[in-house]
Image 1 (tube, rainbow, N blue to C red):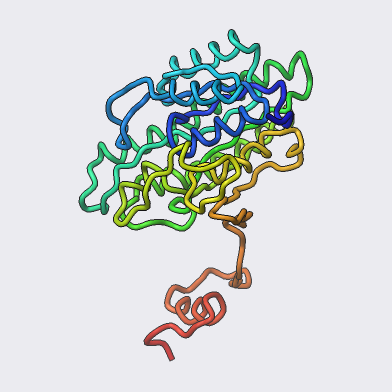
Image 2: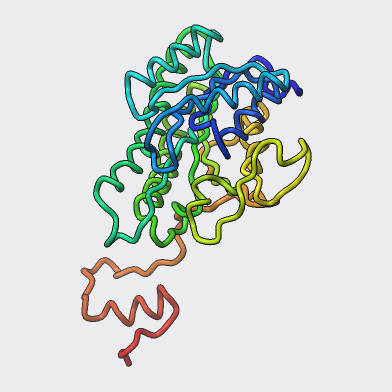
Length: 303
């Protein structure tokens, strides 16, 4: 146990398995008291259970402090009750890690509207709802305490940043989370809150649904300091650091943690531009102008 997060209270959504469980264990390892949230659903978001109890038991067996929560993180009343539980048990909330997610993959011509809506609900609404509850909690504390050192860490993915075939729902949701992160970093900064997004990797239940997926890695498969490039907890040390007071200067960032690399993403930045010279563009002339001046190639069929 370290003291990096001593005295902090964290909520980690979707933390019964994989990446979320890794985050919860890592935060507890560094002294945070953790609310382990998970509905115990399948990868598709179906069913329910008390899978969160497993993570709680693991944390307690390692000397940490944790309680279980089974809220639907896209349901307003459930999220409010989750924060009320955290405050009643631990007195406050300092850290929120939005990790919960499901997958219902398929090419767009095969995907149902229900599968699109279900994924968007869990990932986007299920990130926005805890973020709003956290923002309200921190704003109230700021009014009496001043700077609160709140930490909001959202989960994006490579699919949302560069796209992925068969995941128009999942990729759209993860791209939305990146945009939500940037906006929340602006809205919450004056309260002393940082907001960042992490794009993790690893052998997770969601990854296991894909062709030629690697074998799932369970908590006892690796020693505490053992390295495996597919470890779902590979990004968890980064999350723990972002959750700490040491990361007070880092906000509005999207950071990937893949294998042994931590990569700061640059986002949608301006690359090149052309100007019309204060004149209305002529569509019949745009092809050659954009091809040579913007894209650096000659447009097919143009001379």
